[in-house]
Length: 428
Image 1 (cartoon, rainbow, N blue to C red):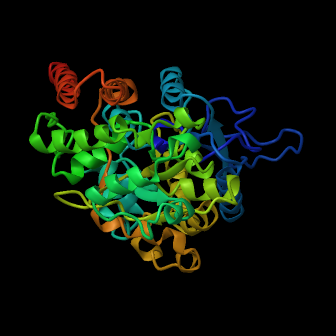
Image 2: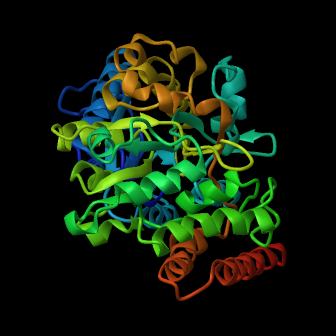
């Protein structure tokens, strides 16, 4: 599960909504009842996907604090339930999108940037002397196109290995695996089909198997995202390792143990290991407080120990009638509000200066997530790959896991389909 696919989201249905606002971001007129000629504060609507009440409450608190210190602006939060990207696109067509949205990783950010539905922020960054040097470069680069910056990072999370130390001890294993070989051996020892416990419980989605391709020295695409690179020996090595875990019966899909994603399977005691990001920490602590879990760096592959990273960012939409005021909100959320967002939301900061904050010292469960940051690689796809990311990658990998396609045939199919999309993009 990733935030990119909304199996676990960060934000939820809120008490503060965009009720009564016609054309988000418009200026409210003064009350005729009082006879005052002063204008009401400018309304700025902030939107993101729906999720947990915890993180929703943080956004509400942040905007309430912002409104107290910025009397000429009134920021409100509007969650989007359902298919976040599709709903936003509908609102863009109607000319009624929010002023500020969350840009997601994967193919969404490049799509919105290239289609001109979010504004370049360079002029606002320059005019307000907003420093970008404190942000991790990987998180910033995710939301850049050429020299233009389209989003200010909000949070991020590299993948890490979540495991159940109780199940490890029962299997005679007294530490997490550090190599692929150990990972496969431990997964076999931890698997007990009679008890519905498996070494790895994971949806075979692309962000998980691409992790193994990366650690084998390969990539799904080249660094400029202009060429598919799944037809390499390194890609085949990484993908085959992942697929073989399922074919050998030591890895299963969450649905096979009555769960919807790896984090839930871990909490249920069905998964000895799963690969997730920081979003799983508050979920496990709140939903399965009796289940012990620990986090370790990902086992190192034959070429490197890279981890895929999943940043998000705040961006200003083209429909905003008040982009200057929207920028003030973003400055607050990613500046003063960033520490609160991290402390209360249980997330990984995008600011290097906050890595040493007391919160992380008091919550060592995050140490190995943070340790992945120096070698984290942002997960991304170019414009035009939404369907490919949302369905094609998963559908083909499922066929490989089920033994209906060989790893080589699956990668060949994905290579061909991705190459076709790139060719069509180039002909537009």
